Length: 278
Image (cartoon, rainbow, N blue to C red; front, top):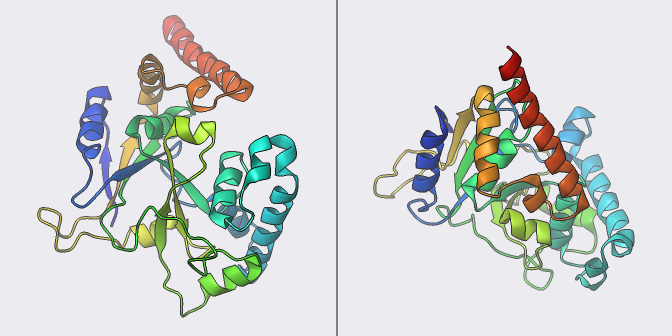
């Protein structure tokens, strides 16, 4: 099972980050932050489909339609999209994901501090969550590209692609993928992604059952760890991240990032004002 620990203060987190940044027993670590610890590791498209009680086949159809619609007009909003390989489905999903379109991908970062930002940016009363994933341990978890010339993963017909990935003969698993054509946001956020071969599965369905085996000092331990960030620490952590220049303005280059940074400022100031007049 995923191990859990409560982060007690900033120095506790920096200790965890320093330890995890060294990598796991057999490779690199990736990190993810979520504003509410009760949320599962569920991609945005999977969340929509489950909330609407959409079956697998219908979900795959919706996924293919969403991709086709995005590809058709993306070049009007971002010039670089005009030069992308239309058969590189993973690349398109990654672009969609970073511009808020629902996909089966889940965002991670190679930086523990960037991941922490997403755990504490929402100054709500909910505890945040910080995940670490030892991505280098398992043979089938690799940072790779799947293209039409090399694998059945990428096909023009997304519905057929989905059927091939979700049939009983295909191993149900989770993989880590990187982006060969990162956007400025992906570079700023040091992005990595997990993708599941089963559209309707949460990513912790698989990761909770992944444990080290045959690794010195790691036998029986989960490759995914979850750390709770108490809600009362969110504002303090956000201020410390600001000192490290990890803010909405740097993680979301552009005017929308500036707007998000002002939202952060209001949140931090409201905490200070409330404490001052209590």
